[in-house]
Amino acid sequence: MDKKVTSLYIVPTPIGNLSDITLRSLEVLRSVDGILAEDTRQSSLLLRHYQIQKPLQSFHSFNEHRAVNAIIERLSKGEILALVSDAGTPGISDPGFLLVRECVKAGLAVECLPGPTAFVPALIKSGLPCDRFVFEGFLPHKKGRQTALKRLAEEDRTIVLYESPMRLVKTLDQLREFFGPARTVSVSRELTKIYEETVTGSVEEVLAHFTAHEPRGEIVIIIDGKKD
Image (cartoon, rainbow, N blue to C red; front, top):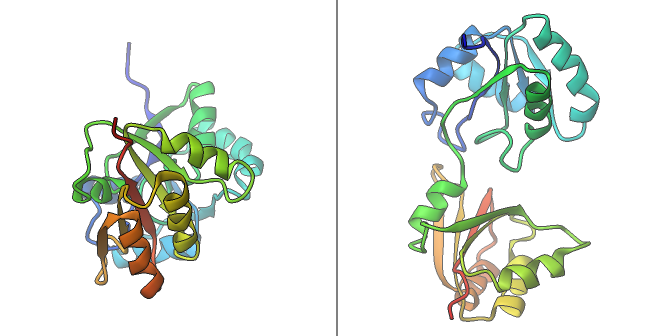
């Protein structure tokens, strides 16, 4: 069977340091007919840095349900598009899943390039087991949050969470409540940037650190699994 011509490329973008993009990703961004971007302003900075001029269309969590059918129609007519998020790999706690699913349903070829994803370096540098882990992304803000924390407190695999700097201290406080103050946790922020920081210790120790030092930047939390 002949290989289908790729209609949609999923292109990971740097999570901080603009040098962390593959040569192949740049080649694809230069070759496609247009780029779907979570935030066109943010993506414009990357494209200008690498002197890439392509039409940009906004595609984010607030408009993806409205926009997806029109995009599928464009792809079906032969356009080749790339999907990028603000940082990292689209579809990992970012828009992308819905579009990929509809492409698969329509028989359109999708290719996902390898590249940056914030949780991988955070997980590896935590020193916690990374042979088995569970990725939870962002916890529910309100409804279902306590239920999720109770479930995860019993998880024996390493746990990966994303969090905003505004909610980090609250989340660590809840981890102390549901997981216990002695559970090991590692918090990485500003990965690949000048002020990159990773703090690893007991929940109590890491909570004390970020209570005293206001966190900034994107946050990845790695939690040790429950031991017998």
